[in-house]
Image (cartoon, rainbow, N blue to C red; front, side, top):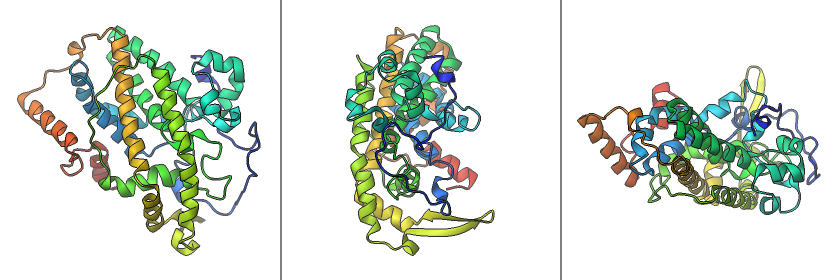
Length: 354
């Protein structure tokens, strides 16, 4: 897998293995909401939230270390997306275009990398995405980092792996039609995973009873998550078309001129209407992401022999212990936002972007 991660790739739908739909293009319309994230992943807000929630689900032997590094894990939850600007190999680590691999590929593809290469060739996997295999490779690297008690490597691989696990829960990361560009729905990617969470986060349930569990076959749980995300695509595309019937262009989009270029973005009214049709889907995928991130962190630690990480943690003061208990209690009661304890929102407030 090491050599694979160095292959130069860019996402492209200009020549898919299977022509599933005719390409529709409009060179004059650019959706502002997809300028930064159309080919990316969950917005920064969600990625950072997923990591923070995952920390609360860890057991006593692991949670103190991760909690002490909470700021790092939340901040660098978005690092893989930021790498896209400088690393040409980064893009296809974030998704897998199942249509490119044949009918029902989500249920037929091998779960291990070597078998997949043998069946589809490395070039095809690199071109059309390999997020499940990327996650499993990082899981092994995180396990080794735990064995070595290498603090920097533990944090690096834990943060990166968590990012890709969250990406694997985004339905549009499992399709060649990843931005609705093949069905006249361009901009759908950002609408679903970034615009809606930014608008609706205050209404989300950010608590849970899930406790990190050991995964005997983590690849099976991972592929189950990707399959479930893929099944959501029908609603992602279908509900957008249904909501569109209630709008005209002037109420669905707003137009601005930026740097001398006309840019269109979805209105808040449309985003809210679309979210209402989706129900709790986006919120549920966020929570499922955090649950699986916690499970993978924990599983890597157990597979490493449950090393004692106390030497990597500074003893908490009484005030810090009090703050920690308050925070965990707020998480369990879904009051992180209410008590201004969600780091991603705090950073937005401080930067003036909320």
